Length: 455
Image (spheres, one colour):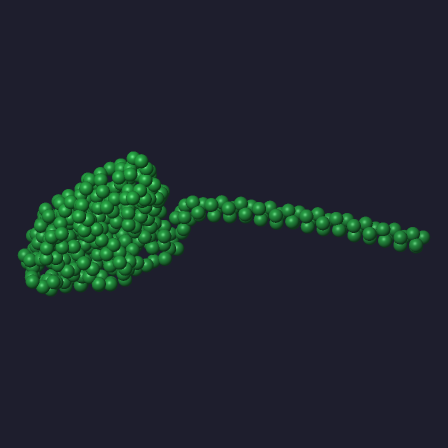
């Protein structure tokens, strides 16, 4: 009996062991299936993410984690011909605009430097560098504007040669990015994050702006300074001048500053015929489209990325291609919506900012529509409530009044001791010939490198 019971106990133990083994196998199989399923899902997700990253590289980057470089805004004015500011030469308003820019940037806690490059009129003195009055230099020093003098030109002191001084920004090698702006424009808020986009590769190293009167306007340009880049731009002019078959009085409507404007198959699609084509806005187009080739263009609150492609000559465009060779040119590669807020830290109005490009953060007083045309320097009456900034009343001001408000605030903050009212003018500086816009003539002196690394 005992033997039978023992035998039955052994069978039960074996049965339990067998069931336990089967159970462990089932659990292990289920666990293995779960692991395999997770790995498959992870693989699919990674494939999706990597595919997205490769197709739209700028969309996956976190703007809040971007690195920050050293940035500057650069203004360039020319034709200044006075030794004392009391004459109120028409260069003065543009100097005051640089002061407004510096004050606005500091008010909104920006780390961007403001650099003012001045080219005195050739008639100012017999020296290579004439200087502004000590009082004006003191204004700039107090407000933190970095003053730099450019060499004067002896032949052809005109708007054309002043306009291409904008490319001096390419010499400012101490900065990671430099934004050139027309001297009648200023940022209305902190724009550091817009520089960050380029510095971190979300937009290209060089950023142009589409214009209403030209395909690419010369009123603003963000560049990455590089050694030899200024020479590269000036060579565009020299190559045209040295070509004996080129006119020295007028651009060829097809070849322009060196290349025809063609489509993807090489057919000419428009002439070189826009405003400023014979000066800065023509040279800028040639430099970006045919020298740089890879750049970002801001248009209608959108980033347009241009990249280098090869254009193969066809039977219809043989005359546009030397020796029937291939041509390297830029074409639109993709479009991207705004990546950050236009004014991340606000603009003093109390209105929340929407997403936008840096173009939306710049106020440009084009033509004769300038805030200093009437000479008003007073604090607008709507804001005469002490020194506290009133967002509601500031919001009610027009663009010109806002500029005057910021100037009056800079005057008070930095103790500039500006007169209560200035006799300013909206006219261009008088120290150069405004109508002489041609750079084609060998008799016009072309700017040469300064060798000034930081400025």
